[in-house]
Amino acid sequence: MEAAISWAPMLASPAISCFDCAGGVGDDWLVLSRMMISSTEGERKHRAAGAAELEATRLVVTLDLRTPPIQQIGYMSRMNASYGRDLDLNLLRVFAVVADTGSVTAAASRLYLTQPAVSAALRRLTTTVGAPLFVRRGRGLALTSRGERLHAALVPHLQAIVDAALSEPHWNPATSERTLRLGLSDTAEFWLLPPLLRVLAREAPRMRLIAIPVQFRTIAAALAGGLEAAVTVADELPATVRRQSLFCTGFVCLFDPRHTRLRRALTAEDYFALDHVIVSYNGDLRGIVEDVVQRQRNIRCSVSTFANLGALLDDSALVATVPALVAAQIRETRRHLATRPLPFVIEGTPTELLWPSSTDDDDACRFVRSKIVDLARSVLPKPQRA
Image (cartoon, rainbow, N blue to C red; front, side):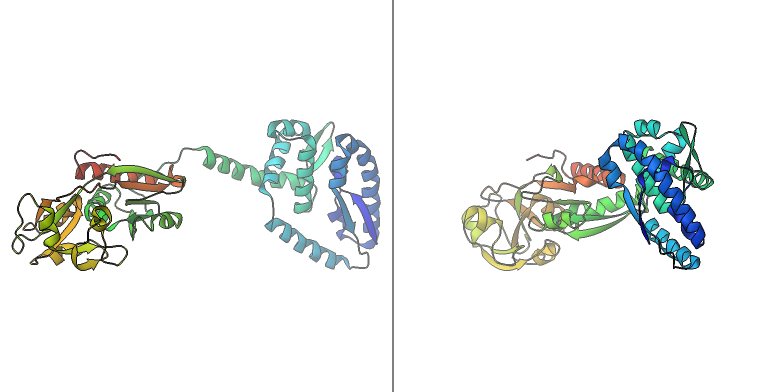
């Protein structure tokens, strides 16, 4: 047997639900008759709210009177579990406001919703719970016993959610155990990573860093892949990436004076007559001098990073053209190495602090970014901006 039953006016009727049909066959007929009678009366009242919503909220209920009651109960239990997994939490907020005000009209005003929208939300929640939550009392609504239990359990959790959403977060670097992924060019590893770790050891001893190698060709993909920040040179980047220039330094010629004697004012002829080691991210024999000056050097070795450049120059006749900051860092541990100005001008590219805009308000990320900026200022007393 199938019966088309309007679910829209059920809230206005006494505490009746299609889930009361878990009894015997006689009870099924009784409840079905009461529902249909209530539906006829409620439907007339509901038309004032609009025929469109009435039609949208109509529910077809199938009653198989041949199914034993115990099977009906099992079916409804499984249905409730399924609906619970997909519960729209907004329905609980509507329920709580209606319970507090005792009125659909007042709740709709407080929630900035229409009355039909609030009524529809209550019907959906009643269907999910499987029991009536409100009954009419005078011109308002009162909670049923099932509604009172739900309201008592719900209110503390809703308040906790609101408090968590609106309260100011408290973040303490001394106790933070965050792990941040920081992209660093190989030059940044020289000047930034050691002092940054020392700062964190003092001020945020439980924080951890994962240093990821990046360079100007890979930085965009690396930031999109989950880096919280990066320090490198960069070309064009998406608008979602924030960037702050840290400094801009020129290049110098680094060498071991025990094996290579160079005059103070190096000439182009002297420079191009030397044997060079270069850093090439392309894995070839072309570097920044070839790109800018358009003249090929006598390159004996090409490496992919600056990490071992000092060891390659030490006790060797090779020379290297490197950023002045890298040369200074290498000379801290190899003081016998020397530098000379280049015989031509190569404009330096600014080293930048980069981060996704999504981390703008992340306290841990802001803390580390501020320390990077401070360290950059200490490296170059007068940082230049591009």
